[in-house]
Image 1 (cartoon, rainbow, N blue to C red):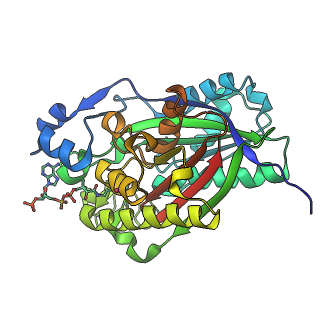
Image 2 (cartoon, helix red, strand yellow; image 1 turned 135 degrees about the vertical axis):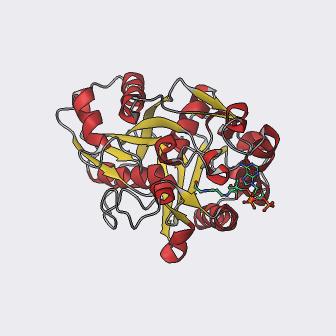
Length: 329
Ligand code: UT7
């Protein structure tokens, strides 16, 4: 049988807007408290775009950092894949804006929408290309401007979200590192628990039929929470089991950063010590598709990932979508 190349993350980059919104700032906007937000979510602050800023600026910044770290030029890229549900425009896509800004003249570019699992979905799509085209270099981005789709009058959601971008370069592995296995999952049966209806084609712009609140993210948090904890655990255990591994083999878990209690639940179910599960939700809130690449980049910068380490990334999001990626660093 022909041996296909494993794809590995050659470099990563991240960028977040300068503006910080603290829990104290939110206390002035809605009936909430730093105590409630900290205890129920683990979030202390989040970065959000200023008026007039766009998320493509940060997607480009993160991408430039990753290219620099990989010692690659924009024209070395064969494909740009951007996971987002909050692109600058519906057309052109966010990946096209990045392609233009970088000058990645030899790259194809498209966006992928899988909510908070978007980055892991995009990574596995890129993995398929690399396995068949070992010379390719693919820029995989997760970028979100959730603050633009946040209802600042709804205290049950507005305390949760933040903006930012993370990017990685995927290429064929030259050693034993790379993506070992993955799971992509979806279950549309409960889609109405987490929605962003306005802006889609079901309702034309300014449709008087659509209540104003539907132009923002709406969520039945408690129900979403229950599904999230169940699915994160299921995916993590399934990936370990079918690869003959136990959680003690893992060097680091990078979960989607939606709620510290969800992350803690996963950690307890996997019986892992705190230092084996990466957490940065206190600084950024939930940045949807950007959360895992930002965390990955920080983990790498902090020296939490060493050559040969076994890394598990796991996510869930609206839809619902689920994803897990197991890789050797
Ligand atoms: O990445 C996308 C996927 N999304 C998620 O993973 C989010 C999953 N869900 C969650 O993280 C949690 O459900 C939330 C953080 C959204 C909410 O936490 P909770 O512990 O499930 O709270 P709850 O919705 O059950 O509300 C408990 C109470 C309610 O008051 P009563 O009815 O008990 O009087 C809420 O009105 O907390 C109240 N509440 C707040 N109080 C102060 C809700 N939001 C706030 C707030 N500040 N911001």
